[in-house]
Length: 175
Image (cartoon, rainbow, N blue to C red; front, top):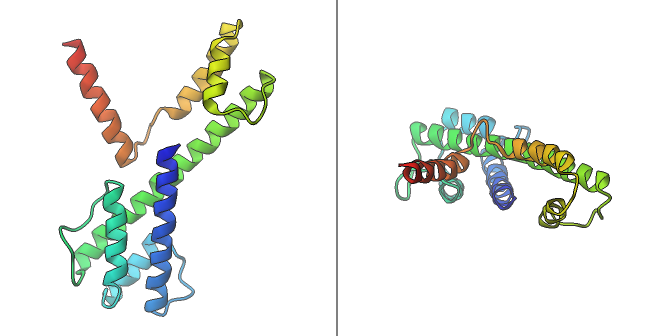
């Protein structure tokens, strides 16, 4: 959930920078997604928007995505392309994570309703309550359904790093 909040915050910050870039290049009717804005920058050049691109690069770096080395005075086409690709990956990762968070919240609400729990209960409180229930089979299937949502099939960059670290620890422990 905290990674979701972080990505959401950074996505909004990038959207503000994309709006500034669109305004600077006098494209008000362009869809403010990374693909369209960065394609325009590749075609027209990035003159005059280096500050916004640097802000985007800084945000991407905070989340572990690609950014050019050091501060770039003038972004060339290749840098713009890679920056756009990284930005789009962040947006895609956020969309995937946002979908899973919504499904997880819906699953938790369904569990609260079936278990007759108050809707104000936090996920931690729900799991504490489930741990004390007598109907283990019912609880097991509900928990399994939530765990399946947390299983990262297509892994965003930060998630694969986290799982890679855990995976190495498991391998080392089993040796």
